[in-house]
Amino acid sequence: MWLAPETLWPSAAGLLRFDHVTQRSLIYLCLLAIPVFVISLPMQNSGAHGVTGDSHAGFVDLIGFPLMLLLMLRLPRSAIFFALFVFLGTALISVLSAQTSKIKTLASVYRLIAIYTPFAIALSLSWTPQAAERAVRWFWWSGLAGVLLGMFVYWIFGAVREHQQALHLGESGGVVYRAGGMLGNSGGFSHLITGWAMSALCLRWLGFGRLPRWQLLVTLGLLIYGIIVTASRAAVLQVAAGMFFALLFMLRAGRSNAGRIVPVVGVFAIALLLLLPLAAMLVDDNFLRGVMMRFGLTDSRSLMQTSRWDNWAQLVNLLGWTPIGIGYKTTTALTSINVDNSYLRIFFEMGVLGLLSFIAFWGLVLFNLLVGDSDPNVRRVKAVAAGMLMGELARMFFSDTFTMYLSMPTMALLMGIMLRLREPDDKVGAADDTMGDAPLPAPRSRPGPRL
Image 1 (cartoon, helix red, strand yellow):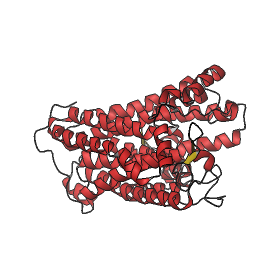
Image 2 (cartoon, one colour):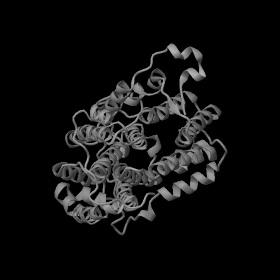
Image 3 (cartoon, rainbow, N blue to C red):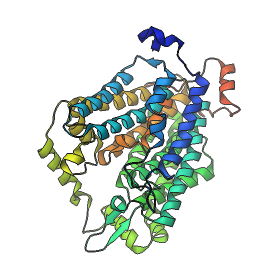
Image 4 (cartoon, rainbow, N blue to C red):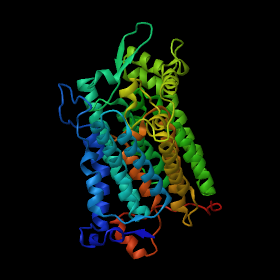
């Protein structure tokens, strides 16, 4: 059952509504423009080396909520949208009930809505494997451009926002700076690199089986180098969890995919073995030392000795919990303590209701990706997409991923495409939709039992 706008407002029947071709074109525009415009290009109020950070206008701010109103989408009456609307509504209510300045936090809620707007657009359409693979392919090229431009900024200008990118070494070892793109946000830049690489490895390589060998090597090389120069432990966790669950879900999807497991595991084992030697060749000793300390590879600093755990304990003692929280984006303003945990931050700022609706939303997305499909190609792609999502959910334990309007829209958008993935009933219509793409390869042997 689809919910048309005119069922809510009779006068909406005569309003502008874009056709599916236009909506799909907007999806491709999002996949092409977000990595380049948001991560790598100069924004408003830029300083000598780039932007100052908080007063810029992101690309998703321009295409977000107004675009959703103009499209007049036919959104399904589903539990996924119900959980999403409850989550966004709780964020808005928490801001209105907060005792801090509401203007800045309302703008943050607006950005949060803009993050999930591309997801809603993608979920309103039907996607064949050919169209979905083409969308992921476009994202690979735009993401490659965004990553290289961000690296170029790091190589030429160095740190854009030194207070955000600084990595302080123990034992008076000084400070090294992490790559952060033009915006100087090493967390957002790392998220872009990891999400871009995981979409290629999981969706194009394992799922669709259409990632050329040279693109595979480029993806692996930039992923490893990106983890080094951003010194992101959350990125390592995202890659490890994402690949593990992608392989696990592939095994569940069908026995015909089991033959891919050994070479995939071998490639990533070799990549991990080459990680530190590659770092020694590409960066100086001081930066390599900083990266090793960041990953807990020295005696003076380990993962359990960081201030992160102390910060979480202090926040629990200071804020406690409430049904709707203390207000979205107000934790740092009230306590001056960084959270760096998506689930804990939602719990503090949007309360129990916000956390439950957030978990319900992504849990329902994961469940629907793992529900059995009659077509083995679709079942395989959805299985690896579910694994990719598990890596994203794991990353949220050590970063404010759900607030990253810099890079989160593309991840939510890809999940929306995967949820609506299906083989077309009309083969003629399927040929028109592929726009000249060759059919995707079929499994080599009989698939296993349905989920």
